[in-house]
Length: 341
Image (cartoon, rainbow, N blue to C red; front, side, top):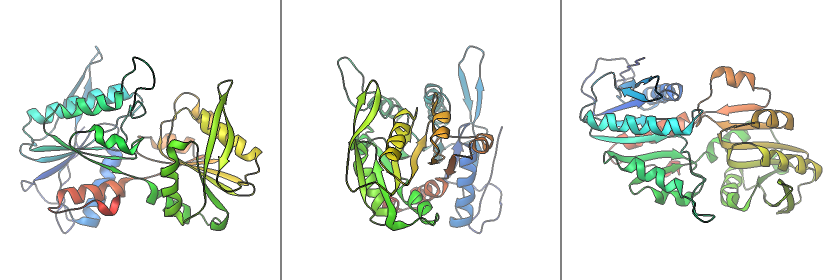
């Protein structure tokens, strides 16, 4: 399937005029990419052709990717998923797409990766274990035309150093803080909670963005494989509305256990904000049965039917504005992303 749009500075559709940039997308991020292009047109008036790359899956399991139009000598923004059901398939498709673009003689490649898989494997925590987060960036950077990566909420900020070229790690704090302010909650009764020490800095930044509300940090230990709250560092949670803030939800076992114990400790209400909703294994039934609302972004592709089926507990807010702004600044000489950081 091919989608081709051209935008002029006035917002009218025009014929191709040898643009210097192009936006491409792999299957999985089409909806996000189309929304980004619409924002670029309506808000910034940018001139960008947009192509959906053609993907074929052979019977052997191999992938084949093709650009429907010439991209020769263009600065290309490639929007790609890295957790569309299978992160390993996504990784291979990304590498094949980058190789195809190099052989198609593009000028440069900027990867727009809303989510980067393998980022939790960021250190050796036992004997003979890999640092897969660094390996992923090393493989991507083997293509000399990949000059830049734009992503959202890496698992740890220091992982920016794993990519030897330029990387912008945007965050969802402003997006979620704006959502909180639309809810009509009593700001005096809110408290942000990090489920572990690793997310404490992230939680503190979110609390400041919401309005300098209190922050708590869970101190946990595992009892028979189940995480138990030993202590909550911070203010008393009894009677408060707790906003759990984290970078991702995977199997949801730990976060649901924390929710249950927060109610046992007297929390009046609990809401969960997480950038990346992976929702593997039994996460969906666990979260639904927890009785709390979960808010995630669309960094990981979800169909409209999925959103509708899970609307009783899940809301998805879009990062399209954030990424459109980033692309605009990258495509503008002297552009800056400092306002997005």
